[in-house]
Structure formats: C-alpha cells, structure tokens
Length: 222
Ligand SMILES: Nc1ncnc2c1ncn2[C@@H]1O[C@H](COP(=O)(O)OP(=O)(O)OP(=O)(O)O)[C@@H](O)[C@H]1O
Image: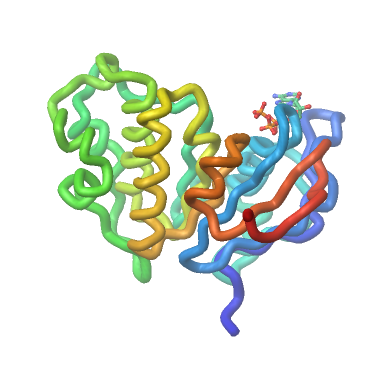
C-alpha cells in the first residue's frame, strides 16, 4: 500500500505560549476528501495553518508525499503542491476573474492535474459566466469560488480548504458542494474545515472531529 499523501502525527501547535493543538494524528490519502469538523474555536483553522507552516513552533511529524515538511517554510510547501485557501478568501478586487486566475498560475506539476481557466470554468460555471467581472464586484460566495479556482491554477496535489460553506447563500453552498465532488472526480485530494454537517456529508469520504484542540472522533459520516 502506498503512503498517504499527507500524514501528520503528534502534531502540536501554539499561538505564542498558548498551546492550541494536542498530538493530532491525521492523514489524507490520494484522491480523498476529508473533513475536519468541530465547533468554533476547536482548532480547525489552526490545523490547516500548522500543516501549511504558518505557525511558529509547531511540533510533530508532517509528511507530504513521503517527504518530511515540518521545517519547510510555507512557500516551499506550496511548491511541493500544497494549496491553501484561507478563511478570509481574498481576491484581487481590481482584477477580473480571468486576471485573478492568471495570477495563480504555476508551472505544471508532475503527477498533478494541470488546470486551465477553461477546465476550471467547467467546474465553476458561475465564474465562466463572468470572466471579465472585477473581483470587487462579486458576491462573497463567488469570491470564495474564485479563491479556490485561483489556488487550483497552482496545480496542487492537495487542497487545504477553510470553511468553504461559511457565510455564503444556501444556493451557493450547494454549488460549492457540487464543485468539490467534481474536484474529487478529477482526482484532487482535499482537506476541508467544516462546521456544516450537511455539507461535510455531501462532499467528504470521512471526517475527524476536533474539540478543544484534540481529535475526539474519526470515521465515516452517516
Ligand atoms: N491568532 C491567534 N492568536 C491567539 N489565539 C488564537 C489565534 N487564532 C485562534 N486562536 C485560538 O485558537 C483556538 C483555535 O482556533 P481556530 O481558529 O483554529 O478554531 P476553529 O475550529 O477554526 O474555529 P472557527 O470555526 O471559529 O474558525 C481558539 O481558542 C482561538 O481563540
């Protein structure tokens, strides 16, 4: 059996002296969609930040594609194919949809899908309907989709997605779920934070439940 794409063990993370994550053990297989669930403040976003290398003093083992990445800075993790979409979903407001996508373009990555705007417009039809729209003139949900699509232009092996359904209209939530299912069909692995159980059920193969910085349950969502 091949090693999981992402494998974290004994993951401990801190904000300054505040200990936030305690000995997390989690993995994401190739092509798998995994949800990190739990209430506000449970540590979901912190987990993604720690995996991306954005926090000082993170401890434990983090292997990506069989390689130890714990000491690598975020840009090197991104170069290896970790794509991160943070909660604040920033788009370039003065750039069009197409220009935002071009800003995310990276060279093809061996073993990963090479995304183009046309291929992404099939997965995100609402973006395809507004290629010239400025980022600043889009709804929150549309901006969220654009940040995901722009990250995909970097051809990642694994997408770390922070609460894609948060604060967006119900109709967009359904579209977002359909989009993640299509990404999975295209072979993309995704680790997403999610409080919305309905959404997590629609898209994920399995889930980890976090509470106060510890994994308290893991398995399928039924
Ligand atoms: N920049 C920060 N500095 C200090 N403490 C922080 C910081 N960001 C988050 N925390 C704390 O870390 C803990 C975990 O927060 P985190 O944002 O990971 O939770 P979460 O599960 O993603 O919740 P939410 O859904 O509300 O974002 C919380 O107690 C939070 O108050």
